Image (cartoon, rainbow, N blue to C red):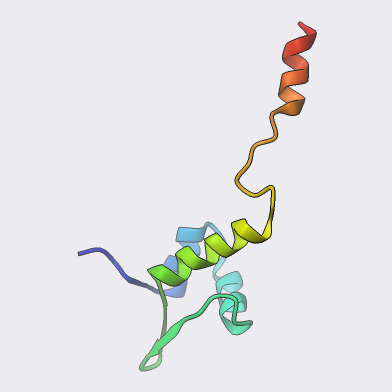
Amino acid sequence: MEKILYTPVEAARVLGIGRSKIYELMGGGALPSVRIGACRRISDAALRAFVVELTESQPDAGRLDVRPALSLVRRR
């Protein structure tokens, strides 16, 4: 069975950011979470939606600018 809920520490590892940043994102509402008793969990869907939102809000996200490398190749 695939994991559907992550602890903040696990979510931080998945996104490659720090635990404190995860708590900041949750607190600010940018990363939705659920409470189970005293525990906070972030759903797989919330993590994926967060990444999609980031890439859509940054026009150049996910694109590699190869123009500098191409100019080096052309000089040779």
